[in-house]
Image 1 (cartoon, rainbow, N blue to C red):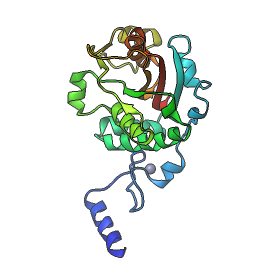
Image 2 (cartoon, protein in one colour; image 1 turned 135 degrees about the vertical axis):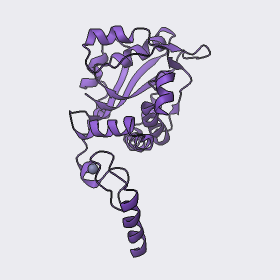
Image 3 (cartoon, helix red, strand yellow; image 1 turned 135 degrees about the horizontal axis):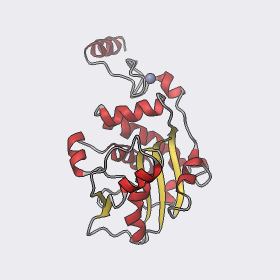
Image 4 (cartoon, helix red, strand yellow; image 1 turned 120 degrees about the vertical axis):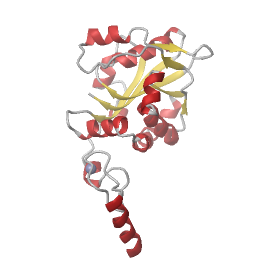
Length: 231
Ligand SMILES: [Zn+2]
């Protein structure tokens, strides 16, 4: 044990293993996220009330939505923003998978796999995915799939249009930016599927809405939404 600790300390000096949120060096017993951040996760617990929460309300009326939940509440400079940034911009897909597994174990406890047939991560445009090397929403969805047993499907919908960043856009601009951004792949069979769309951060919901559009048009039975964080 002493040797293991000495070795851990040595490796940490050369290649520090950092908390995915606050970026402090992790202790030997810690994995991905430090104990302090873990204890301060802004959990939403929306999965306990998946049709009565502020994220569900974003889609009510515009989507045939039956379920909406996010792992964390997003706040400026808060833990959820730090984690989402780390996954997306610091090549930490494995952090996304880890958080997905964690959230998936909470979702499995409320039997989510009985309500849905597949998880569909919101796709990136192929050029962006090539540059980044991975899709952060797919990393999170992969973890959720592992602990809930719900199939991960990345062969149904693609992002056909390279949309511009929406950070400074108003709701109407976001909807225009997203119009027809997503398309079904020609061989995709979605009729009667109960689909959970997965994204990293949900702000106005315009991206999810646009991604759901071709799935709904082709007759999917139900749409649910899961996110790492809800703004
Ligand atoms: Zn931390």
